[in-house]
Length: 373
Ligand SMILES: *Cc1c(COP(=O)(O)O)cnc(C)c1O
Ligand SMILES: [Zn+2]
Image (cartoon, rainbow, N blue to C red; front, top):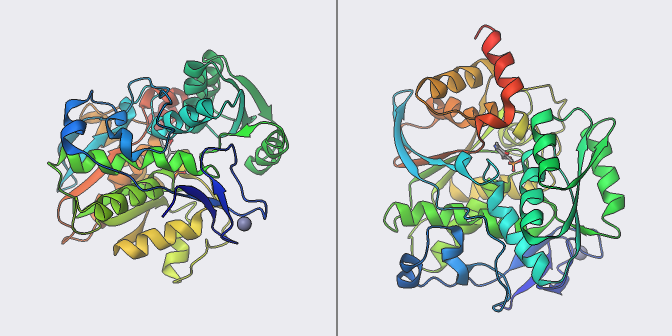
């Protein structure tokens, strides 16, 4: 199988290292690439995700744009009566696991000679792209809804990116960036398949850190599925390379108040359910119309996993419980821990993640503390 981009709708193929984020037919592109793993070389390299260099699509002569991301610690925690391995993704350079996708995408963009990127986000993806664009000296403009939390806007500005505060809904922001993406490279964490080639390293690290063994279950928060789909890709790579002998079951968590995929799974549907989204503490996964929703549903089904939903009270309780043990995360990151009691009792060795740092959402944390839980 040659290295290329392939349209999920019409199956048209495009060369891998040409700036393109969407098929001419408008379809989503997926990236075909055969990863290689040399366990000796991997073990001899510094503890960043670039230790898996031969498994990451980037021209051989290109230098990665890196801030030392990846290889986050895994800590065993017993919480809600369950012992789980928790990967500390909140310790990433920009404060969320989105750095995995950003380092790969921006490295490839620089190698392709891209000088300007645009991205839209309600927070962490924009901050991660802005951080790596700064490190690569690439011009960057981030489009965000005008009501985005001030901490995240400040972080994007600090990295030197232009910020475009778009009045109206998240949909209005998407429309505005779409126009900008006609003339500049769209460093989208949802559309651009390179982003998922970075987030897949989550799976590689989990296996390496467990002694090149796959876990039985992986529990992840899902909005657009950038971590879920990345993990799925990564475990499939490891399976293909013979480094694990079965896919872990993927358990995907959504907030009850915005759960188009968990609702679809209940109805056995293969597309996101049409929902009316309500505000939730888990703002990072509040995505009413996930573009790769069908892929998320397929990944969970293929792995033999399930969709779980958590209430606002459960999220707030889990957040407090974590903070009370010294883990300061954004409310979104508490959703997975809130779902632990719903995990089947035969789930076996389970890995989950804390996805975003608590310092990213100071104002929101204070509100949550004030309200009775
Ligand atoms: C992006 C993000 C997630 C997962 O979101 P997806 O939309 O599924 O990619 C979870 N937690 C945090 C803190 C995030 O920034
Ligand atoms: Zn197409």
